[in-house]
Image (cartoon, rainbow over all chains, first blue to last red):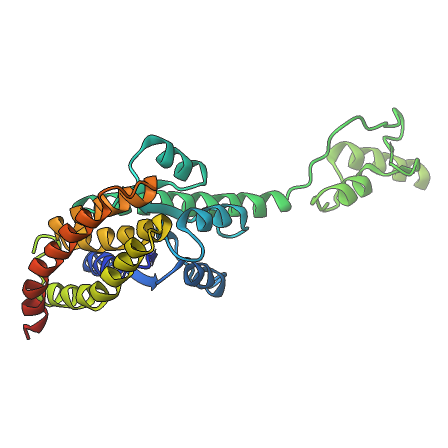
Length: 204
Length: 104
């Protein structure tokens, strides 16, 4: 999983980077909010980060603003965001979560806590990816299914049906137009007997 | 060392990075105090507190935290004494970090 770290403090950035790399994650870094947003835009539709650790207070665009932008931008809505903050009062944390952050870590961060929280994020990212793949599969399957619904007038004698254009047509041609059905043609035993009788009668 | 998971090279790099920014950060805080600019003091002290906290330089982080709180609240009574405490804390920390950064 690719992780973006955005923090204007070089020491914190380096420490986050080293800690996450030690656990095998692919990390890219940004030294302010503008650089973080640029990274997302440049990597869109390629290998954009699935998880972001954003410092709340940064020059330029703050972490909380990036969070709002991600939630409002198609393709980035499901990026898992962890806000890094030294703010600890409940109103601030509520503001961060309301802006769309999934989690937060207090500054200075504890490496063990960081790893645990990123693992939670990774699980959520994987679940989300699996869910997205399933939805795509279902959408593709649904695109191949044409459903017939409603009332269809049918002639009691010849069994023709009345279509939307008010014309009477054979039931097989109607179904072929309105579904993915295809017909193979044959003769059933009853009709076969009937036909044979008619043939015999006509020869006599 | 627990912060860096026993990685001496990482510890050395962090000391180097911290020292690079330390001078400009203290200068910025001093300038903010001289100008009695609370907003600038808040931002400058916040940055130093975060950085110092990351390397567990707790005394510097605490001294910067006092200045940050003064800046945030725009209450600068006693700011000179708080700045003195930060200066002393930084002076005590610097030689240890210089030694750490110099290790090959």
